[in-house]
Amino acid sequence: MPEPDQCSWNSMVSGLAQQGRYEQALEWFVNMHGEGFVLNEYTFGFGLSACAGLREVKMGVQIHGVIAKSCCSSDVYMGSALIDMYSKCWNVACTQ
Image 1 (cartoon, rainbow, N blue to C red):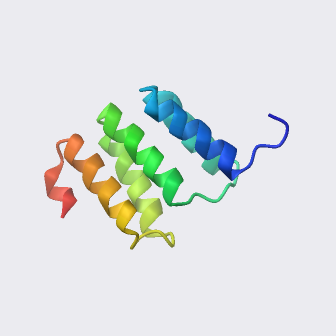
Image 2 (image 1 turned 45 degrees about the vertical axis):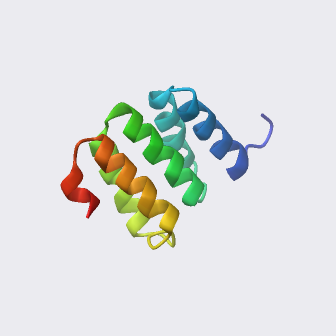
């Protein structure tokens, strides 16, 4: 890919998560953030979906922290993704 952009990065994270390749999806998520791309509600949702698939609550909490500092913190989609991740990680207390 000559010039990856936010859309292409999101497509990779999404596609990997949808195929059950959660670890790779999280690697792409972390790399995307490290490359300085702006994370949006879709990026966060795909990252949380990968965390839910792995039952990886530690990474999910870190993503939640980034969401809290972003403009997406009051997004309904983000709230649903967070509830999904926490409930699948058996951390129901955090869903409140």
